Image 1 (cartoon, rainbow, N blue to C red):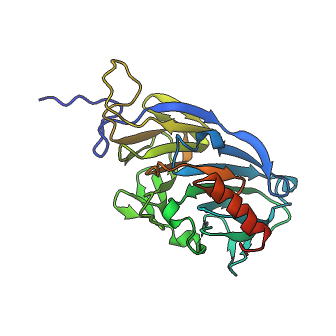
Image 2: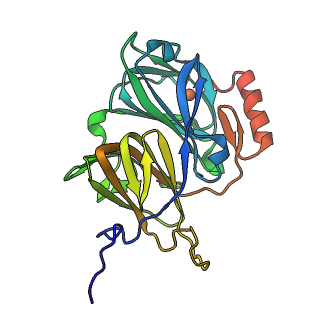
Image 3: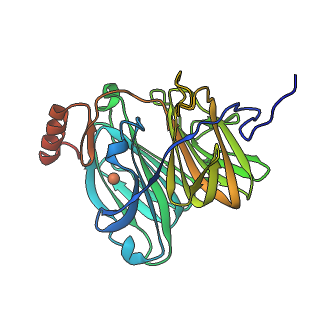
Length: 303
Ligand code: FE2
């Protein structure tokens, strides 16, 4: 029987997920006036469960970042900071300290609570990177805080012609990433694609997934995703409506770089399907737990 080649027919992924929605982030500021783009906003937390937030920062103007993020608390989730350019110093109430440099990752588990600062360690030059918030299940929200600096050289990479995949979490093409998490099975890849290069990633059907393009452009199942856009990838589901947009049968995603090539993060994870109660830097399951978090912070019990 003749094989029919379609743009989405590949060895690992038979049918690519489609783009359900393109999102342009919201320009905002946080900390002491750091300008950033909030790509994954609060209204998308349920859709992109277990991810709570993605901020992209990128500027060559020190006035946009010099204030940094002075002491502030977190409880109930994990923060993952990935630096592309620039240097940031982290200090926290658990006694951890680390310097984020280009290509490195800081993975902080806030757990029951931590107070930390993230301050630029430079007066000039470019600062660029991402901060992703990954939720914790209710059963581990109150675990002791944890912290890990992952130097650039310790982030595993997978290479193919025209493709570099830096594997921050999860696994791709048999390469296990720097971090694994049992409950949410996060996949976090930083992809560098040469012009026209193609990258495929199998994805479990129930996992929520998105790609954010920060250089060049990508196409996903025929949809163009330009720089500065997040593509929410449709989950496959049994879809008996003809022409349904559920991406029925998709077993992964195929990304193809445009003429300028592309750099993008591809992020996916298993949803927790638990209630999400957020008040600023606290993310719990119930309002009562949020009130408790605020009381604990005010009473100095997070330090
Ligand atoms: Fe923080």
